[in-house]
Length: 341
Image (cartoon, rainbow, N blue to C red):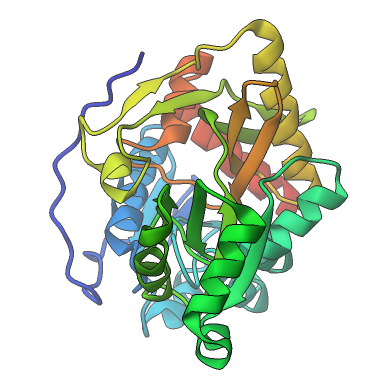
């Protein structure tokens, strides 16, 4: 079992720019700009991810600048002309493809999936449909906009959900991350509150059947021979793997590698690689899934910008694989640089 030690960070106020850093125009090593922050609900997580990745890349000899997503960004990128950009933005704009569209427009290479595939992954129902088309399992689900409850009446819609999906079920926003607005519902009387909490983070809810089993996260890194899965990380969280369980030390128990048989480990690795390919992802991804008692791996969602904080799952998977974190991050940057040439 791994026990990540949290690194103290100073919380940044929304909209506060990251401290500027000097840039040497006569550089010899590649210049990487790490984008972190933004104005989503996951701003603080993004800042923590960005700082840790920047620190790791500097340890390999790269020149690294951190920058927020603000009104100064475009002029900064045009003036600085980095060799590669690593968007470590979570939530809207960071994962919905919009910032990646901007990077394409200004002609800068970047780490990670392109804008079109990012938009597919960002929308959970659309990505689930793509996964089903690829022959992968995902929990049964329905997608319901908030307006439907106003038009048809909340009670009839809720009753229909319970008849169609059954209990237990999970309510989550169709877009978003870090388990914000996500509720596991085990009692019918708790469903209305779960819908209200979900709609606080988006206009459309995804309601899916809750799967009983082992919760896993499998990260995928593209190497010279294509996408490869890192060891699965097993997540054991009392009361569900919510925002606090993800980012507060001591709230969750992690096992890296997961406590799986060799056959199970091979299965979930194959599922993560197939999801990466089916969704046309690039460089890096993380697939969250549940392995049920029958041996079926149900994909919950896929992430194009996995967290890189001291509590995040991908760094734990890297440690379990025996790779050195800085070297692996450098290899990801080098792959993006080679692809851009």
